[in-house]
Image 1 (cartoon, rainbow, N blue to C red):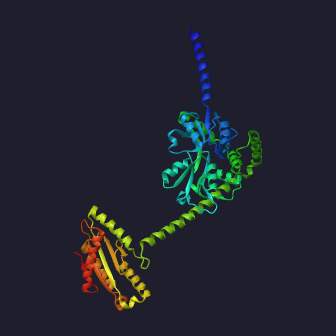
Image 2: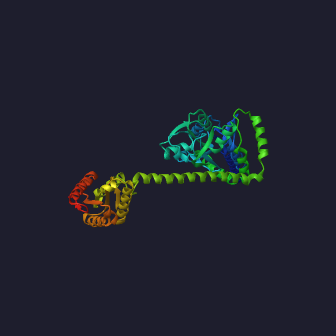
Amino acid sequence: MNQFTYVIRLISLFIFLVSSSLAHSENNTVKYCIDPKWAPYEALVAGEHVGISAEYMRVVSSLSSIKFELVATDTWAQSLEYLQRGECHMLSMLTASEYRRQFMTFSDSYFEAPNVLVASIGTPILQGYDGVGSRLLGVVRGYRQMEYITRYYPSLRIKVIDSEREGLEMLLSGDLDVMVGSLLTVNTFINMHNLDSLAIVGYAEPYDLLAFGVAKSHAHIVPLLNDAIARIPEDKEVSIYKQWSSSKVRYNATYKPYVLGLVCFIGFLCWFIWRARVKLHVRRLLHEKNEEIQLLKVQLSDKSRTLEFLTTRDALTGLYNRNHMIQRAEEEISRYQRFHSPASLIVFEVNLARSLDESDNALDVLFKQIATTCLAAVREVDVVARFSNERFVVLCPQTDIEAAKILIYRLRDKLLGQSAFKNQGVGMFFSLSELQPAETFLEWEHRTAKALSQSKRYGSGTVSIAD
């Protein structure tokens, strides 16, 4: 009885191992979808999967126990829909994103694809998406670039297209101003049609790190994919890149001529001696473009700083202008309302001699001397502005009236002590006020100006303190 039971158990174990082996074999048959119009990365030609991803999948299949079965679709959006519905288990070539990670698990990256901006000849170099401006930008439906632009550049005008090929055709017809596409796809289309009217006008961040996207229900194959990707020989990667970096895919080709052409093409390009040169050429090209983009960024930064200076400074004296002074004063009023920190305002006005009115050069020299003397007399925290032609304002943050008195008398003595001002008969009048609760800048400035009028009645060099 014990021997019979032992035999039964052996037979049961054998049946279990066989069934497990068959189940494992079936589980490693993976249905996948592709982007049918993304040559040379991948495409559907006469019902066959061709392109860079097809070559990598053949290598991965040979290095692992995974068998791939194509599920044909018409568009990339349909491929995404099929994977979410479970009609296919994997997408062959895509970049990970937060949205896609909700229903997919990604393998290690096996190919890098730079993205470029394409436009008509004559369009200036565009510094990424910042340079697109108000131009109408074409973006493929379902691509990661759509998620990236929506998150980081929501103000861009975009038009959703079904494929990169459609976008390039819309550029030719004038329905788009700019399109974002993959470098090899754009290059293949332009070369295939010998187009002289389109050009690459910039790079679009970020680069795509392409990988296999696997439905979470089949996440168990991801380690197998990663193991196979890690064991792909470098010479095979170079061979695949050479094969497709300048190829021309014709969508009306039949299967047999395509296979024969592909075999001949591979035979001519399998020269491993060019491996290092191809990589060097690509790196040099990317380096030159990056240097060009960095140069343009530096130039833009310099112009921005110049523009900022011109919009906040008086052109003659280099002091801050009226608008900037009002802005800084409003900030100080806001600080006073929150923290009750004191602030004072000094206003002084120059009474010009009649002889100076007839000489623009003498006036310019005089105002520049006043600006220089004023900056030397005040503190670093004080804000000095030329408020009008002959009136100057000094904002003293976190300064009460007593401290401001010391400052205004020092400023008056410095200005009136200049021999050049004495010889030219220049009169100066001064007023001072401390910020009051619930007071706006206009009220503050008006109260200080009234005190200035009082100084004018008493003569040059008089300092009046506002009530």
